Amino acid sequence: MNAFTELSGSERLRKPAIITAIVFAAVIIAFSIKGGGLIPAFIVVALPFIGLFFYFVFKDPRKGLIFTFTINYFIIGLTRYLPGPLGLVIDGMLIIVYIAVFFRSFRIKTDWSPAKNDLTLLASIWFLYSIFQLFNPEAVSREAWFYAMRGVSFYFFLTVPLTFLLFGKVKDLRLFFTLWSVFTLLGVAKGVMQFKFGVDPFEQRWLNQGGAITHILFGKLRIFSFFSDAGQFGGNMGFAGLVFGILGLNEKNRMRKGFYFFVSLAAFYGMLISGTRGSIAVPAAGSVVYIILRKQFKMLILGGIFIALAFSFFKYTTIGQGNAEIRRMRTAFDPNEASFQVREANQQKFRVYLSTRPFGGGIGSCGNWGMRFSPDTFLATTPPDGWYTSIWAEQGIVGLSLHLFILLYILIKASFITMFRLKNEEIKTKMQALIAGIFGIMVASYSSGLIGQMPTGIIIYMSMAFLFMARKFEKELVNTNDNE
Image 1 (cartoon, rainbow, N blue to C red):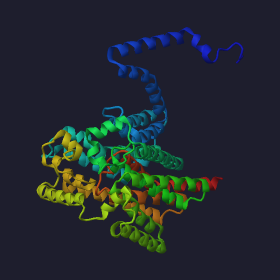
Image 2 (cartoon, one colour; image 1 turned 45 degrees about the vertical axis):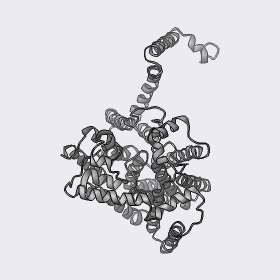
Image 3 (tube, helix red, strand yellow; image 1 turned 90 degrees about the vertical axis):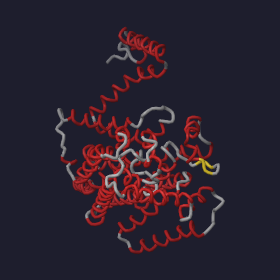
Image 4 (cartoon, rainbow, N blue to C red; image 1 turned 120 degrees about the horizontal axis):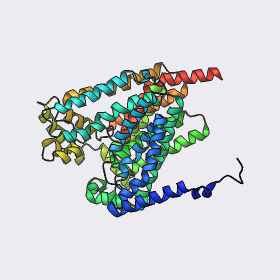
């Protein structure tokens, strides 16, 4: 190439084809703005980038799963700025990645065997039970079923096999933790901005439209960051704080150890300012499981003493009562607290209602979806106040029993593998952290809907798949070390 004769940089724009394309695009944008405003124009401008995105995803479906995991973390927050059913983007992305995997198999033989396991089977059974709920005679709205079943079972059903197929290497596991840590810090940063400087105009509009009922208590803002609500933010931060704290405890590299501890402390601070009382169950319950997984009796005793001291601090003392966040957390240990009494009363109503309905009242009949699609029904007007109560109300004792069996099976099998099969310390530590975090989320979901909401849901589903690939990761590291 002759640098003095070849065109480079801005000189390439002198080519007639380039100039024609720019003029043509400008004309289309102008007519779009004239005909429908900025949104059609934005779509026109975005089309080339969308095409480029599809090119990369179909060339390497793994990039599509990475993008899905990324956008899953921010999509709910974006709805405050871009009104619309943006949550459906996750559905679309997961399906697109499946299509990309299918078309890739025409040029590269796809090995589907990693997805053939008991976790995929359990996810499929749970999704089939959700399909069965379409024919529940108690169900009032099929449209509500479509929206609600996505968080209940659809994302679980789609995410698990894709993780086995596309994230089956140690580098993928490490990337997962790297992305999660960065997103956690971004979530905390946004939360601190709200805590120190207040909400922006779009968030204020969301509060004015009803969010303030649950997010401004006694004149104090419950921090929600870019999450759906403060409960989801607090629970997710407790999850991340526990996981990265465990990673930091066992990391030998000083730089990574310091980074993990920084992420953990930041996440716990985010949990505190969220004002979510139930989120404290995530590190409390998860820590107990972690100590058991380590099989260290002394740590179990010390951990028990620490938990007892923390419990006594919140329940039997008034230390720090002047701090609004501590004061809010302390109410979680008061059985006479008003919201606790209301939850108990509502559960008694559900017991009576569900005594003759073993399959529940239909998916989407409770909570926000119930208020939107069947606002005058009993289930819509009775708050479930928790994930398991919601499953019980919508899918009956049969659905709740199946759901609990699936969760406990995953937890017990993963714990057995981690305690008695794994030898590599890196893989063992990461699996212990995930098991502890998942158990903490399971406990905290008694009083909130953490499992079925973004972004926590997909983080958990991918974590479950990683737990079932633990021995595969260990084998890869052993083979790599043998070849060095």
